[in-house]
Length: 316
Ligand code: SF4
Image 1 (tube, rainbow, N blue to C red):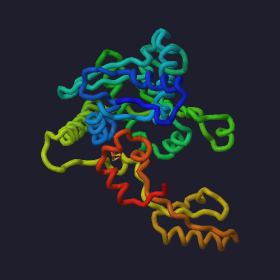
Image 2: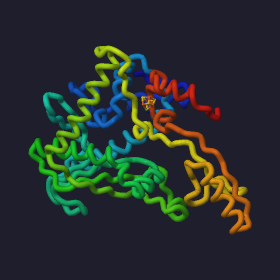
Image 3: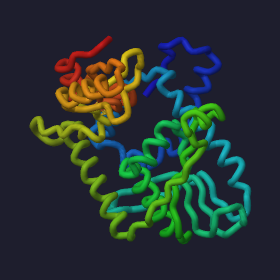
Image 4: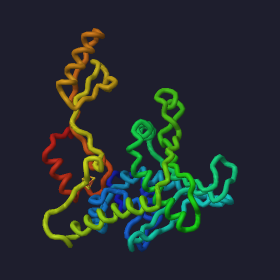
């Protein structure tokens, strides 16, 4: 995979992005998969591996990854020398003969009196304030974080470091005092998860291993036929088409005003116009596959994405 400068970023920044993203932790490890790869959509991961050598990714699309690398490096430097803390280290585990590797962020082997306690494992996430708010409102969407942390906890426990609590600490990279004041953006929020039984973590990892093995077999042509599974709607971060009720002159939909049923949206707009005396309109929102559209390096090689583009009218 090659990082290219299609967007003409200033050369020093382009070099910094290329170098840091190319030297990501875990590169060159002997493994079946890393924990991150294991919990990605299996179809996407298999396509990524197949086209890895010829993939070209614009440096601009690595911006968030680059910020994440700087963030983790700063955390590692600041914490790895503190007695009792192990930060930003890599471990591995064998599951049914498959070597899974992973880098955990912060583990406290003893209580060092900085607010955390012995046996706590923290995963630091640099993300957007909107995403933190969305996850607080929809805790089911933290599924991936929960299982990743459980996998790291199992690795640490097997290596002789018992884990008693697990948390993802999410930090808003776009936080500002003004956003906190106006929209309730938190600078950070901690999501605490239950530590699952070892067998449950192994079973969950094995389920992912089996999916990835099967996708690899199809993608690399070792299994006959067109039996490709594709990413599921939730893996594609899919939003169905919808109709939004909007007060005339505004851009955002009214509270609770985005509906998948057009007639329902029209009914709400008519009622609001009648009760408030202000005209309300209905605006069409086309369906979207957010991961495919903005976060997938292999979309140009994906048959499912190709058919989606062919079948959907899109505003260009
Ligand atoms: S383009 Fe979408 S469907 Fe295709 S691999 Fe990427 S995320 Fe999955």
